[in-house]
Image 1: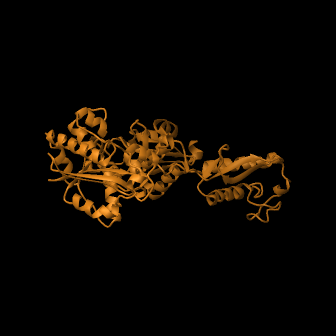
Image 2: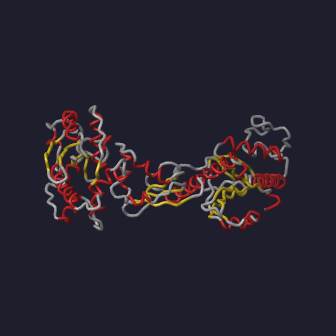
Image 3: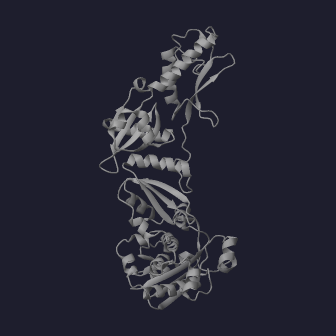
Amino acid sequence: MLYAIVDIETTGSYALGNGITEIAIVIHDGERVLHVYETLVNPQRHIPLFIQSLTGISNEMVVNAPTFDEIAAQVYELLQNKIFVAHNVNFDYSFVKHHLSEAGYELNLRKLCTVRLARKIVPGLKHYNLGKLCHHLEINHNNHHRAGGDALATSDLFAYLVARDSEEVIASMLKGRNSEQYLPPNVPIEQLDSLPPSPGVYYFYDVRGKIIYVGKALNLKKRVKSHFSNNKAGKQKQDFLRDIYRISFKPCATELMAHILESVEIRKLWPLHNRSQKGYLPQFGLFAYEDQLGYMRLAIEKNKNHFKPLYTFNTIIEGHHWLRQMITEFELCPRLCNMAKSADCENGIDATGCTGTCGANIDPAFYNERVKDAVNWIQTHLPTFILLDQGLTAEEQSCILIRNGNIYGMGYIKEERLLNDLDKLQAELEPLQDNDYIRNLVYKHAAEYPEKCISFNLDARN
């Protein structure tokens, strides 16, 4: 078995938008070096100053160097039928694979990461970056941050690890589609192995222990593995993989509960790499205010930071639907509900039954009582129900409580008697901050599975 130990220097951290400035490939048999290939590469783009300072490779040094297209055939032949080895292998592999693909060559090799190997064969060290690892193991490492120097140091490290691989870690990592080949270098495989094939929410942490991503899953093990099953060359993917150091999870009884918990956690933690839901807010609300004449007005408006709506809606159409019902049911003035522009309501909704309130012919106090009744009406006509489903164990049930149209809590219950007392039930559940996103998830699920719902008559119970 032969190994191609690779190191590259680049213009940036991700392959899709950056070039290779230097590449070294050391052909190794596990004991000794058989061949060394090394060359500067013209990346055909500017090398940032901080990278010039780090590597010592300047724009002037690569101007007459071959482009990657010109060396692609030679690189491809050197790598064929070898195990691709590198320190943080997925970084180097993503660049080489991407640029070979751009030149018309498809790379598909098994990989070994010397960071992951060292963590298993030489456990307990504080640092596993190449420089500090070589220093600790007394491995010669000259010419730091240059492809040739780093590749030769990695080859010596690899030989050191092979010689001490008494538990056949390398063979295990190369067996089939082993997850070790795809995991970020700093994530312990044990954390991936501990994930159950069941619903839940998972968390990715950075080197400081901060949560940087929250996700939901119907199958935790399968979903988390999927994050690492491809090594896309874009910046977002590469930054994401590089930042992950630890994984944890919380089990949930159902996919719906995992979906809800994910939303709650994202809004609470605002993880760096979560994009969805951060900007999700209910768009419209029902607002009440008093005008200069003392009339209580209602309006469906876009939500405002400093004014709390009586209720929220995803669309203005949904809001207007409820407001029209209130106008009809309680003989409210369309103009005072901002549903008509003119004094006689002729340009608004159908004003049949309008009692002249638009002309201020009704005492404000009398009219405002109608508005209060209408507001109470919408509160009592919003649904109250319990959504029951399977629990984490056979002895319990999962429970989600909606009261007056708002989500109040979620959790697990063992005593069915709690279902007869909403206040006691609510006290047993984990409180949830109501938002339209979660509420709509529950409403949709309840509509699909009405047999899981227990509905309540608010007038009778509240």
